[in-house]
Every structure is written in structure tokens, then in C-alpha cells.
Length: 330
Image (cartoon, rainbow, N blue to C red; front, side):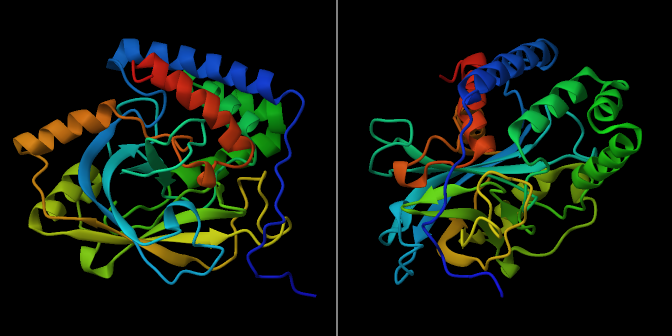
């Protein structure tokens, strides 16, 4: 019998009795890592430290959406000013040529409603990467990986061997190297994903940002300067993407707590992101770069209707806030 493909509200989070203590510990670990890296590179984020560029545009929500999609921000048509921040995922300010996760943050302004953190919402943020699923099933594995990787040298391989055994550790190292080294054609031409779920009213979804074909194709040499490639395209004309949602249908096919599983359900376009032609090197563009660097792109800065879901997202609530405190943004 095939699994159902209909959007379902029958999802459940599975919190552990030790979650609060674990997440607080993660927050302390990342705060220490952030402080150490900031002494080297200057004040900045714990991860996604290197901002590549930023832009301003409009997110336009469509109408006629199915009931499972027409929730929260997407419950009615409208247009919202949106900030975009592009980044490399690492904890250092490394060359763009070095394999890394690539990140794109959206900060949608002018939203109205209750915040996922309590009180009135100030923005709806989406944090996206160039992978459809997270490289780790749960937060503990990711935190241990990040801490080992931050030490440099052979610390990461030693950690993987301790955790998975000699052969398992070597295999996991190769798998992670393949993930980080995934071919990437540029922020204007590659789809980007939330990789982890959020609520959509009573439903649960993941998010994809799908570039318009008119944005162009990958350009040779773009990997030397991802921000420069994006800025050059913006200087030449507008860029557009479809913002899409992918629904939860069952715990077997679309698990909430295991972030490493690719959800097989189809995406539905709910909004259009348009970045008009702009010059990131102009006075206005430079000011936006500074504003975006100082701003918060946090999945928990969201409408309550879009509360982040799952273990990785619950850990982010604490870790992101500690990172914001560490750079004076909270």
C-alpha cells in the first residue's frame, strides 16, 4: 500500500525531558566558539559569518492557494518589503572557492500577528541553504561535529571515529565532504531550501526558493566571488524566485524530528520574490549591506503560525539567540 500524499495535520513534535538542558549547553558551546572566532575575524555570527552581499526586494503572496498552504503569511494576497542576506555557512571568513554550505536569509517586513517568540511579530524570517535536507538527523550530532570542526587539524576525524568507529567514521567523513562539496552554480540560479520544517497554521511544511529561468545560467568564474556574481546580475536587471511550500503528509514519509530525510512530497508556489535592479556598491547599497549584517535572520523571528518545528529547530531557538547576544544584536 502506498503512503498518503495529502497534506495532513497529524504531525507531532517529540520533545525530550533533557531538551532544555541540552539546548542551553549548545548555546554555551556556540557562544564560546563565536567569541573565539570573533577575536580572529572581528565581531560576527557563530555560523554564516561571511556575508557575501545583501539586497532589498518584494515578496508578493498569491491568491487561490489550497487550504493547507493558505496559512499565516500566506493566508491572503499582499506584498511585503523583504531583505535578502547571502552568506557562506562556515564559522570563518574563508575564500568563496573553499567548499561550504551556502545560505540565503529572507527577512520579510511589515507582517502582522503573534510572534513565535511571544508578543507581536516584527518580521517573518526564512533561513535557506543549498541542500534539500539537513546533513544531520538531530541537533546533538551537528553540535558535536561543529565543535570538532572548529578545532582544526585532525580533531574532526578523531571525533567521527570515536562516534562511529574506524570504518563508520571514515565513511561519515567522506559523506560530509561530499555534502559540503556539492556543486553550486550561484545564488541566482540554484534552488535553496529550509531543509527543516516549520508550522503552517495547523499543517507542517518545508520551504524552497526556486529561481526563475530568466535569472540566467551559471557563469564560469562565479565561484571566486559569489557575492560579486549576484551583484553583477542585479546591476543588469531584476531577479525573481518562486517561494514554495512542501507539505507534511505522514511521519513515515515526512518526519518532523529527523532533519536528514528528504521529503518526497511536491512543492506548491505560494509567493514570488522580486529583487529589482539595484547597485549594491552605491551609497544606498552599502548602507543595506551594513544593515543586513547587523540584522537578525532567525527562523524563530516568525509568526506563531510559522513556528519552527523539530529538534534542530528547537536547538536553533537557543543557539541563534546566543549568537545574537554575542554580536550585540539582541
